[in-house]
Image 1 (spheres, rainbow, N blue to C red):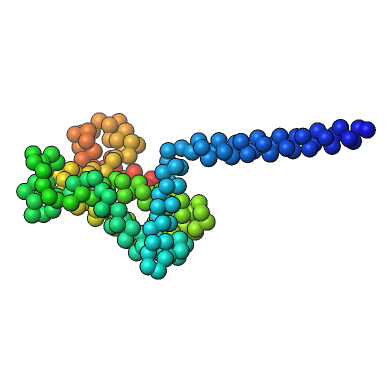
Image 2: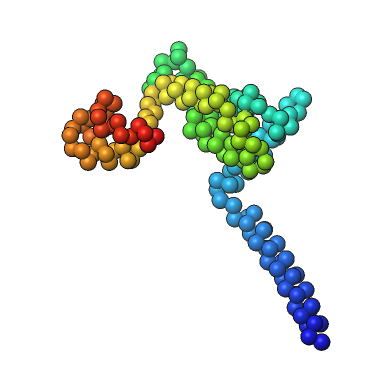
Length: 196
């Protein structure tokens, strides 16, 4: 008799565990972070883009050229005004009047998109070595877009300085940069080279 109740409790425990796991799975799917939701949406969008190619391209057979084409395709949905060289507002951050220059995807949006797609590729079983989103051609393209948009919109992009380097420059009190980290010939910067 002692085995009968135990068997029933095991079956009851098993079915309740399954119910809990199912509930957690559904809650986990519903409670994805904003980043995870966006990454999933981006991955699905890229997959659909590849399916719509003639001929369709399987996800794990795509290369950096497909990614570059996808980024250029996305420009048609952009909301960032990028002035052309011949535009009178070229280089002005806040033009006083509208112009006919095209709308493009902002550099920051493309950079974030590539980061999410790069992570999604590896999460779906792709190897880091063959990840088309991490290809050097993609980095070059993003850098060119960034520089082009900065010039066209009159917005300088400056590299963020590492906090450790700023603390080092401020602690010395030797001047040599006016507190802005200027002057790369400053001896204060030499110890940081081996940390990078």
